[in-house]
Length: 131
Ligand SMILES: [Zn+2]
Image (cartoon, rainbow, N blue to C red):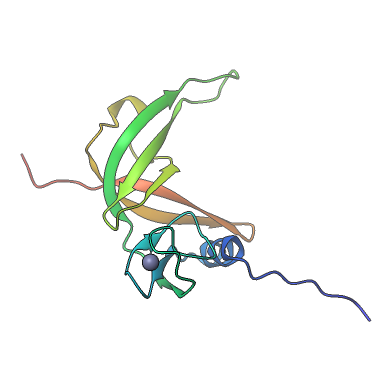
């Protein structure tokens, strides 16, 4: 009989949600803190009562770096630290904008890029109404 070892660790749940195009984060049911990266207990109060919920994904650019091409033909891209409105920070890439145009403090929103059974979170700039 095959010993099917199936892990349901929080990293696993996170990846599987992404693969289905869903950006979900854990929320602590005791102190309501959002927990990221995925954990077995709340980083604020150590409660194990965490639940998953889709995240709006809106936040601001906390820091950004442009990564220059290392190979011929490769375009520069940015690596940014995004501070989500729910209070957690995550490393990602801002797409749909030139890397050098990414500004600290700019509003961004998460989007899941899913392909080949895996997903990753990237961020799009939010167009502001200002003229
Ligand atoms: Zn908590």
